[in-house]
Image (tube, rainbow, N blue to C red; front, side, top):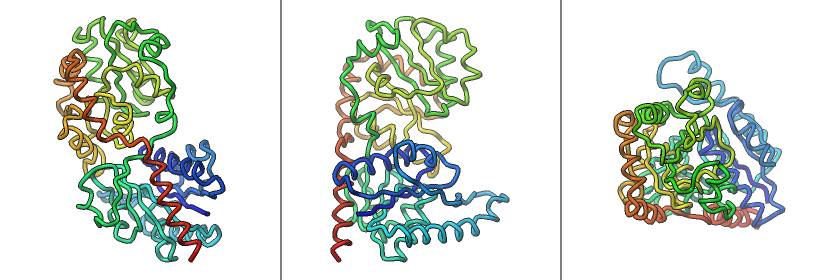
Length: 369
């Protein structure tokens, strides 16, 4: 069977796509999988590292303000459609998969024109524009949140959860104490893990910097702080990060180690992050990014908050309230236990396998016909 997987642009699209591909290979090793991404985006590096071929389309997003880039937008769309058509004609996929992002649009539109069945995987609680447009033509739509029928036809929706990258779902059995020992932090301290994505988040960084410099974060609380590549040159020069209870990183490869060490996580509310927290049962304070499409991170966070599965601090309030909320929650064992229990509702450890099984069913019926 041949499968095309399209989309990307962010880790929140790319890692679920790779997880689906890995699950397809696990269920049906002879499956031939090709990826389609946007030229110059993260997927062009990450997908080959995962062992899959990828082609990049010139497609880009349409800017809401008047820019020179918008003048070239129609030409890039036409070129992307043509390249997608040529690739489909040559590869002859039995089924196509879209995970959201710029490349999904032209790839799945061509699949529809050519009569190739396609499915969608929507990571967020507020569906992205590409998936909303294509949803009515899709065979199946795999979602991670309830009430997604406000965006998609109800009879096409399957509540599978988000596929999680293997390093998280297959983490080793290190205990909290062993993880802290590896990090050089005392196991007797409570531990907070703060991260804002690979690039970092200035709001979170400024709040933690203030909390440390003003003594609001005591020496008997461990801080694991992923500052981000963009902000590392500035924050790595701070004297306060040299304290024995503080470990800082520009970028983190070993996320399972950090999660295992943490009693509490402070982070943004991207769909992949939320799914990882749910899978691991980690209590979290979510600070949604205000600069994402349709404010979907707030929607992700509120889906948890409404069930008592997380605590929300608005980005605009983080400078004033984040450290205070963090200090209150990390020392409240009863609340930590309650939040950990509630977030388990969103845990779907077999999401990638369920999605792969549905894709194989659709592809098999296409082959037989």
